[in-house]
Length: 229
Image (cartoon, rainbow, N blue to C red; front, side, top):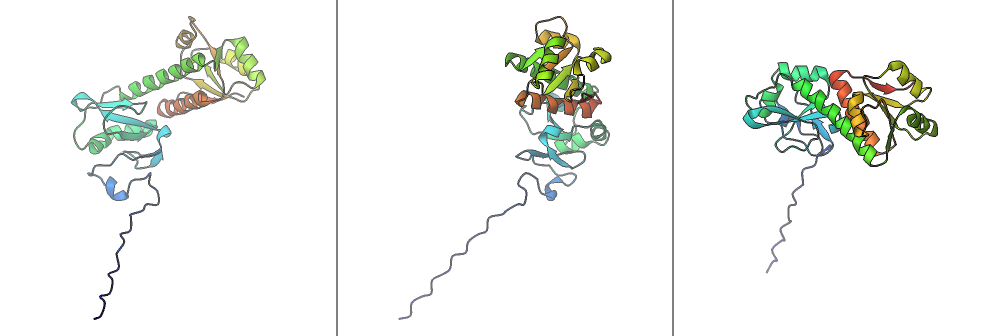
């Protein structure tokens, strides 16, 4: 009696992608819902560019389908990501990008850009406060100069209403990023003072976060952050 030949098992190939962080093009055609990507990259709802989250702003729908900026990226709901640039925001507002991404009509606050700018300034102030509590920040002309001379300052946060000549005097010849985004009153409140003009931040994660938020603010509003000369 002849033995029956064994059937060969067919193995299914698992689907693979060349870049797991980027959604397939078929998922982002106009009129189709765009899935929120997982990983460090997100796709802009206005330009379709795929960028790091740090260079973008997340939005969600609030009550009554009002578009709400989620600057920390933690609010519940499906996110709509936009490149952190003033021209891209204007394009999204004028061409209905939020309605397409949300698959329906949305309410756009007339002060949406101002909300973003105010929120980013608040995040910068909060990061300075975090640095102070961690012992990674000092304020005042003399202390900031000492940190600069000792190579302990990774970033300077200067009051945006302070004197440009005084700013140049404290920086001197040191090459260091300078953030201009918060008023002297707000900086002073972080240190328990009425007013503060010069703040130095030590190297580390907080300094990196400050530069990230300052970069988003500069791109959205044109507020200067640069290097000392």
